[in-house]
Length: 162
Image (cartoon, rainbow, N blue to C red; front, side, top):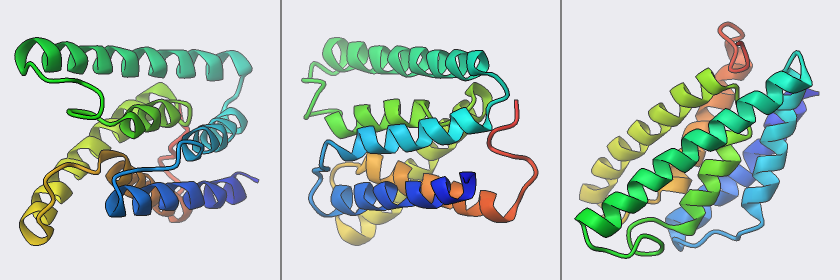
């Protein structure tokens, strides 16, 4: 069942990546769909309901803290508008959808590596394709697809171990 859910999760991830690369606009309903699928995978991979809820709550607190720091830095230091100028709404929605999908330790590792992956790929694509803005949600979606595909072949360590 979890295998089929992971495969199902690849579809909205792929659509998010394609739309973010091509148009820099992603259909909003893909994020709740992705969040629900990731949340169901996480829930069925959890030993107890309480553990699942604790992980989701901690992950959402971390995302809110990160976004708050980014927001303050953007308006106070860089003197720019946060949403749609420095950071896209799709990126915010992707962060929260991603937060539903993994235990906290896995979330932190995957989130940090997805951001690093996005930065490196953007730096390469900027020179070859002339990108001026980072398709963050799209690149993080590509990273998540890669993580899911690797997890299909490598069972240990699991993305859902505590």
